[in-house]
Amino acid sequence: MRKHTLSSSAHGLRKVGRNSGQAAALVVVLASGCAGAALPAEVPAQHAPPSSAATTSPLGATRLARLVAGRNALAPMLAEWGLAESGSSCVLLFTDHEEWLVGCGRDVEGFVATGEEAQGEPVLHMGQSLAVSGQLLPFEQIKLAIVGTVGTWSRADGEPAPVLLLQDWDTLHSHHPGFTNSDVSEWLGVLVHEGFHAHQMWHPNVRRVFLELTEQQPTVVGPEDLANFYRANEEFRLALAREHTLLRSATETHHTQAEARQTLRAWLALYNARREHFRADLEGAVHSTRALDIDAFYTFVEGAARYVEARSLTTPPGALANDPAFAATRGRAISQLPGLGGIGPKYVYSIGMYLCLVLDDAAPGWQARVLANPGLLIGYINEVVGAGT
Image (tube, rainbow, N blue to C red; front, side, top):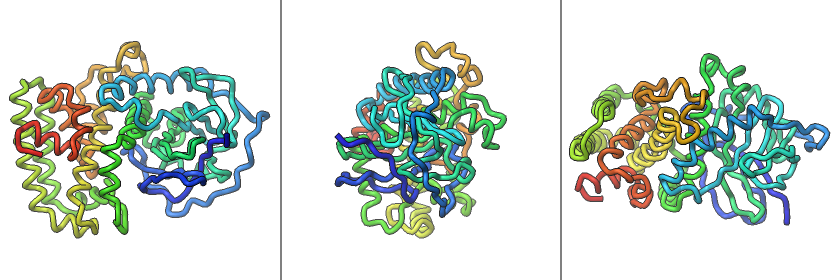
């Protein structure tokens, strides 16, 4: 059996097809609002010498405990959504000079086993960072761009699978100005958010919608394109502020099912008015006739991931309920979490999150039903309020 291979290529959201004997590209998808910055247009790669047993170092008890805590926080969320079997839990954790793989198999080219295990899975090490497919991406040029993000890799059977690229907390805390004054709960939030994407984006219905939206498109439109339109259009910002205020206020106290559904009905009226009013301008700005569908898709993709992240931080599950790593966020109102509850250029994150929170009251157990709906989140909300799909 040939070894697994990790490889790198141009960044950006791309379709992932069946592998035909060559290693799948490690496609960097800057899906997290915590990513900090876009990758430079050209990141000069250096040759990365093969790792050897002589340079192998362990992940260590502290890093291992953090990784396991994040995975344990994510696990019940994946079960709730029915996503445990979609995608994978493969993680590449990197510092400024080395990296580890967890949950990616036992035989990955260039990596050496440390002898440690994380939840029964071997930990592999490489004494370079960020090293993929024999190429080294200089840490100084990626330290702000890659906090946590999802790429793809080629398994031993040739099929592409997701991999979570995650900057180590100590490294992030030391090198990223956005995290200098943060605590480890923010890093755990990134792990949960991006780890959710690694399963969510591999669900068959989500994958189908994504491929439909990107097929035959000369450029790939994402949240940053929508954010640019938000920044440039004051009227658009005001329309979204009205939606955000409605949804946020509805989540700050418990509502009956009827009240929650009325909130969704009121939001749909605002949302549909926004679609009609800004259709032509948004399509022109992002150069796509599918602009409104892309807006809806990312409201689901990023909103659901932020919802899962926020819930894991405010109500850590099971044995994590008293874990000190969650002390700063446990029990707080989600709308009060720094960086998660406000409105801004990446509006799809917070609008989508609040829609998910309202659905908790409007249609308990809604998560798997959203994944099955052809229109995903917006399609399911139409169904819930009786407006059709």
